[in-house]
Image (cartoon, rainbow, N blue to C red; front, side, top):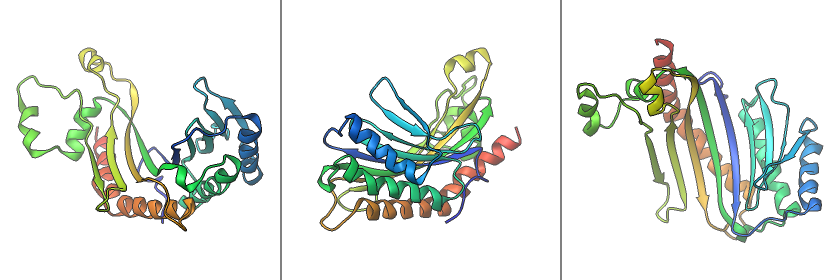
Length: 247
């Protein structure tokens, strides 16, 4: 297991546990959960409630790397931006999954889905969509389209989703998100924005008898690590780095 800070400007590893039923929103339940997190990570000191009922506890963002945890009506999330190590962020996710069933009354039956997401951001001033064509190519059936005289690519966000079992309970999705709009193309004014690469491994449905949230997360993390190391780094991240570097 390696760090991935050398392959993009920023990267992050997030975990989300989605539930079928609403989670407790009382002061006692929410604050007790966050207090358990602060015992392990005292630097989690910024607490706030967003308008849509999302409670967030996070570290200071000044240094560019920070951890955060959130509780919403039907999901619990955990993440780190530019983590010091993959092992460290996984320990954080495991702690959240260890505490959430007790503090927030989450049952293995109540699991709608559990997912791990690796995200990679590249800062680039220019047409993101054209850059992706140069860096990653495109479906052969579409290649001739960009050769049409006067044509300018204004949306190019490749993605693929696939299942890892016959029941389609474990699925993966690799996608790229761009921020260039038709307005940017029309005016020629391209702000410095981020191109994002996302790899998500998601497990659907209630847990099996004897299965824990922690063991399910470890399996998803292994899937993500294998895909990032054996495919995403060499076939997506490095080509994007190289294409941006020569611009």
